[in-house]
Length: 231
Image (cartoon, rainbow, N blue to C red; front, side, top):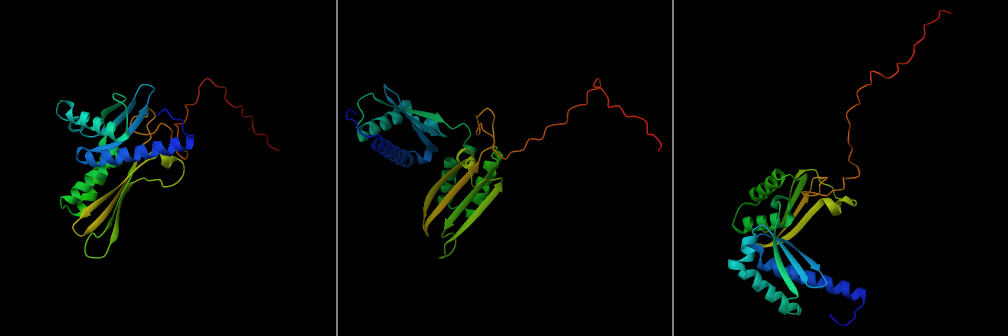
């Protein structure tokens, strides 16, 4: 972009670009475990990192599919030749990725699995992969003509305060079933990880750590206890 634009317009343009790119990849790579996108702008080129559970499917045979996606993004958003690069990155732990689990639940419901059974299966898988807590909400016409919401919970979940931004992973998906549209919401609370690999580095502010009592030092001076004097 050679023309100078105001900072306000730039942030809006970046947001619109990200939203449209995310929607395109979501529709294109839904079956390949698409789990989000990251855009890195460098002076030389724009790097788009696609996170997915099945990276081999994203790349395609001999990298054909990723080249097609690169060409598509380049033409749609008006990038110059060679100024945009797409990469595929494997999700380290798909059990802790809310987007991947929401998509998994979506395909289970489309396959005709009972809502309760599908939700409990997803809930158990998330907890087995080291989550601190999770919540699955399914709402819509589940049985009969009347719409209702079903909520499934396990573990510990926070809903307010600043830690929500770091600790909670959430995703919303819609399933078009025969009887109508059903909404899915998956919330995962990550565990605190001092190394920052599977969860946030910063501990929750109200976390209490109980230390073991120190061993009494034998060499320390003992308190002097005088004789009791009869009055």
